[in-house]
Length: 71
Image (cartoon, rainbow, N blue to C red; front, side, top):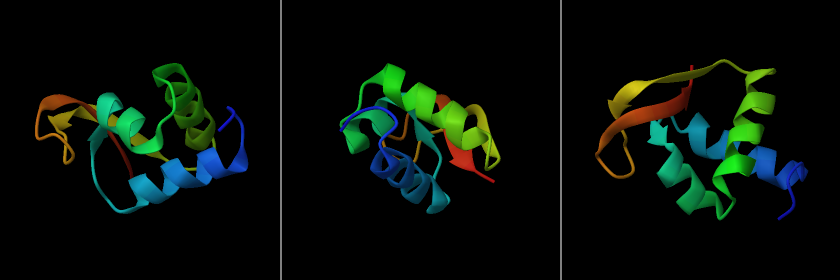
């Protein structure tokens, strides 16, 4: 999928809307996008929704890292 594709936005919003906290590595794995693409999409989505990023246990890999979630 190309960056900016509406499906990319909806995929990340859907993943984060499940109230999970996920690290960049898990978001990349779940979306098959590059880390740069995921980062750009998170910034764009953050213009419409509140995204929290904090050091937390990632619900995907159970590792303590910076995790992202919709609040």
